[in-house]
Length: 326
Ligand code: PBG
Image (cartoon, rainbow, N blue to C red; front, side):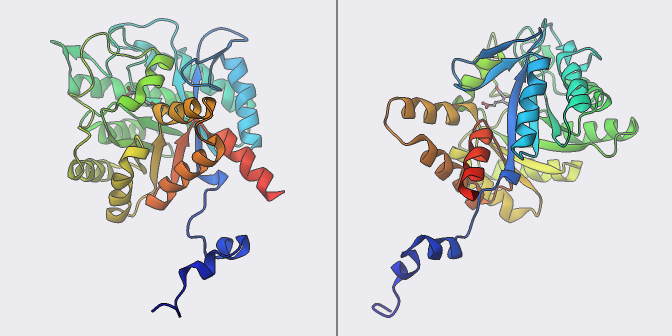
């Protein structure tokens, strides 16, 4: 076809590039993960995740006002409880850290979706995502507690619950429990394809949730597998998930692509702590341009098929996009 067809023609200037651009990252796509802890006036930077903090509820409220002002549609909350126990009972306590945070946010912040991570690893003394029996997580015993946790979050006012435990059958059990308690309007974003990944390292430091013994490979997915992620997504869809999530994002773009092709459902990608920390560390060393790499990473998730991105960069992206519009 050359010389009639010249692909470079449409790349000649920014107006042309804008016109033919196939994917866009917007503030509407973003969810900001936040860590809430007991106390008052607490704002401690998480050393492994620069610019992210352990915040007490009062500080969290301020932070969420700012996030809402930036136009970010939602936040996902992770709790650092006052105390841990064998089963993680803080997760379903009326005065648990998450319940307290939700009530404060619902009272004082307008126009922000409050999503909660539903899991146990930050709340159990052993650091596993459920009830331990003979050294492994008991699936069906954990389901009962997951349902209690989800209903308790809904009672406190959560708009959406997001199970990240990878137990079999959890979405169905949670949907039934929520509906039975009158929370048919509370949606479920399922961590459907959640891999046993080393990219969660900084988060585990942040959430103090490293298992004291063993690892999570008995419940989280094996990184070499792809078809299995399709089956996981299919099950969660059948059990009533409203949004499917793939996690991590960057090393699993093929999974995002495949799930988006296969199911016509809203799809979220979790740009996890390790992906965030790598960019921060490399930028700090002067090895890469942080802003450009951040935007390139996030657009790759959109191009692969993600509708929603959970990212610790959410505020930075929102600010950058707003600046560009001016
Ligand atoms: C809890 C949970 C984890 C993350 C989100 N929810 C950690 C894990 O499974 O060990 C990781 C988030 C991140 O790395 O940013 N189960």
